[in-house]
Structure formats: C-alpha cells, structure tokens
Amino acid sequence: MAEAFISWFSAAIILFILFLILIPKLKLEAERKFNLPPSPPRLPLIGNLHQLGHLPHLSLRRLSHKFGPIILLRLGQIPTVVISSAKLAEAALKTHDLALCSRPFLHSAQHIFYNCTDIVFSPYGSYWRHIRKITILELLSARRVQSYASVRQQEVARLVHRVAQSPYPETLDLTKILALYANDVLCRMALGREFSGGGEYHLHGFQELLEEYQVLLGGFSVGDLFPSLAFVNTLTGMKSRLVRTFKGFDRIFDQVIEEHLSPERRSLGEAKDLVDVLLDIQKNGSDDKIPLTMDNVKAVILDMFVAGTDTTFIILDWGMTELITNPKVMERAQNEVRSIMGDRTVVLEKDVSELPYLKAVVKEIHRLHPPAPVLVPRESMEDITIEGYDIPAKTRFFVNAWAIGRDPESWKEPEKFDPERFMNSDVDFRGQNFEFIPFGAGRRICPGITMGIATIELALAQLLHSFDWELPYGIEAKDLDMSEVFGITMHRIQHLEVLAKPYFASSTSK
Image (cartoon, rainbow, N blue to C red; front, side, top):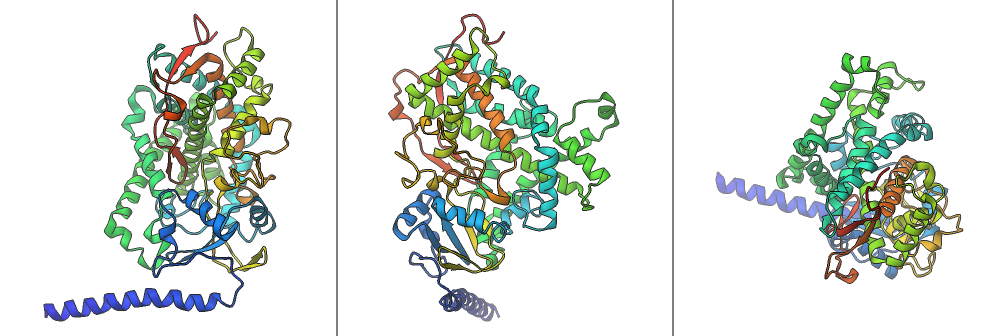
C-alpha cells in the first residue's frame, strides 16, 4: 500500500513538473504571434529569475545595456516588461497611463494590506479611484500638510536634541536617530501619537515590523511569481511571516482606532490627525457613496505610515552620507542656510523657500537614490504597443527609476553627486520630467510628495545649520560601505556613524 502511494505521488510530481514545463512552451507559441520586446535567454521553469541577483535594479540595468531600454522577462510564470529610459517611461506612464495604471494582485501585499485595499497596491477600479480622491483632497492636500507644520517643527527640535546628546567628539549613529525622526513625524501626523517616548516604540516592535515589511514586500514571493505554486509559501514559512507581520500592525491600529473613538479624546478637542479624518469619512460617508470598512481605514493608515516613514528616512540617510562624502557640496549648503538664518538658530519652514541650493541637494539625492528603485509594479489591463513592440494584457511592468536617474542619455556625469545640475533648472520630481521620476508619474504617482519633501527639507536644513559634520577619526569617505539592501525600498546596508560638532557655542535652539 505504502509503495503504491509513493509511486502514485512520484507520478503526480512528475506530471506536475511536465505541466509547468509545457505551459511556458504553449505560451511561447502564442507569443510568436506578437512582436514582443527583446528578451534574454530563459531557463525552464524559472525563466529569467536567475538573472536578477541580489540587487535587481542593478541587474536590470545591465540587461538593458545589452538588450535595450525595453525588455521582456519571464519571471517564473509572469511575463514582465522592464522600462529603463526616460523616453519609454513617458510612453508607459503618460501615453499609456490608463492602460497601465493597475497593480498586479501581489500575494504579499494581499496578506499585509487588507486584501490590497490600500492606495499603493489596490488594483485600478472604482474603489481605488475613491480612496485616491480621499487621499488627495482630505489626507494629503496642501492645506492638510501645512496644518502639521508645528509637528514637523517640534520633531526637528527633538532630532537636534538627540544629536546633541552625543557630545563632540563622541561618535553617534545618525542612521538610528534619523529613523526615529521619520517614525515620530509620521506617527504624530497619521496616528496622533509618537512611539519613541517612554519606550513605546520598542514595546510595540515598530522597527522590527518595518524591517520585516521591507523584506516581505521587496522580495520575490513564490506566490507572486508562480501563482499555481502559491501553497509553497506555507511550506517555506513565508505565509506565517506575512500573517505575523500583518497581525503586528493590525494590533497597533486597533489600539490607535480605539483611542480615537474614545469620547474622552473627542471631548478634549485635539487637532485632527489622519486617523480622525478617515474615521469621520468611514462614519459619515462621502460623495462617492462607496462605504469604507474599518479594514479599509486600517489599510490606508498602513500606507500612510510605512510609505512616509521609510522614504523620509532613506532620503535623509543617503543625503547625509552623500554630503559628508562630498565636503564641498556640504560647505555650500551650510553656507546658504547660515547666510539666510543669520543669528537665528531655529530654521522655520518659511526659511526653506529661500534655500534653492538645499532644494537642489534634495533633488540630487532623489536622483541617485530613489527610495523605490524600480517603483511599484504595474499591470497592463489591455493590449498596447510601445516603441513598435506588442505588449499583451496582464503583463507586469517594472520601471527602473534608479537606472533612468543615472542614464547618460539624460544626465551629464550621472554617477556624480552634483546638486548644481538642478540649479536654474525646471526639472522636477512631480511626474512631468520622465528622466527624473523617483515618485513615479501618471495616475499612480505618489500622492505624498508634498508631505514627504516638507519633512525632509526642514530636517536637512536644520541639521546643516546646527552642526558641523565629520567622519570618525581614521575613517575616510572611501572607507564607507555604500552597498544597498534591496527591498520594496532601498536602504544603505551600513549605519552612518559620524561626529557632530555644535555650530552654536551655547545652544542649538533659541
């Protein structure tokens, strides 16, 4: 009996493998009817997966150098087009924006983002249009962003205080301090509370949840690449990790929502945060007559939090790294801030508008280090043609914003950190200049640009004004490890350890 079962099971496995081999061949026959983009040679079953490596944005750029700025890959069972030039990005994200504005239903996002009912991963349709409208008009409007100016000001003051707690010439872990700043700003704006004080940050495991989120959403899940083998995620432990991370975030949001619904809090008349706004819409409805469930509310809150904290932290961390390793740029940026500030020690948001070089620095950081190097994948909803190539419906799209930002066709000395390139230039990151799309473009452009840039510029200006920055004794710029950790966003692998010498003799704030 046992031998018969083993024979049957072995035969089933063989038939299943043959099925997996046969299906791609049948699809290949169908593909020959189309004029498809050039494609690197594939292996059976896995297709081009072996060519991605540990840092896909680098591997994809190398493939684009060999096969062209538009290539077709087979990632497991998924046909995937990769765009690596400004011209083709414009064709995809502007000319064919509507056809390409949906998202693939990713296995990982489905588990963490409440069945993909957030803004980032929700497929195109009436629900996504509804929550996007809420986000743009209610959550991230210019008026709402301005209403949180005092929060940003207070958290920048706390950032400066944390840096000053490491007396010069004591080495400090600036990466850790910048992560706390980004988390606290977003927690206060989105959730109405901060988690770093009183040990709550570590009590709730925020950092651990964020780090696990990066790995789970940035990797290539078996379920996403081989939909017919999604059950393997259970065997590998991936599903349990997804569920555990989801439950961690969900537990926090349940507590936050309970606090916001408390009659005592309402009676205090506290300023509205993003959770308050969403709960009001959830309770009272909106003009679109599409009701929001409490899970929908939590999905959008999770978007606000993880997207905002991580991108802010990454840009500040890479920015301070680039400035410290490019002292002439650092000196010019500091001189600009200090000339505007005079004897005042606290930078205000209105001061930032008078700092064009600092704004150019922030753009240059985004060019070289876009937080999401290949953007969030899209999926074609219909057959389209790009550059003469036929792209069938249900094809996944990656836009390599990292490669586009370093393309010598668009940028002089593209590997050089040179903010001067943005001085007296109209090139901006709001989706109209396709050589520079760190936030994407078209309908799926990041709606939080204004909020994120305000949080970054104020912190960077204050850090440059309040301190003179040096590397620890015996460490030179060439010694820094500039390696990246690829996830859904792109961190430096090593923490930035520096010396911060107070610029003001008595105090860093007046």
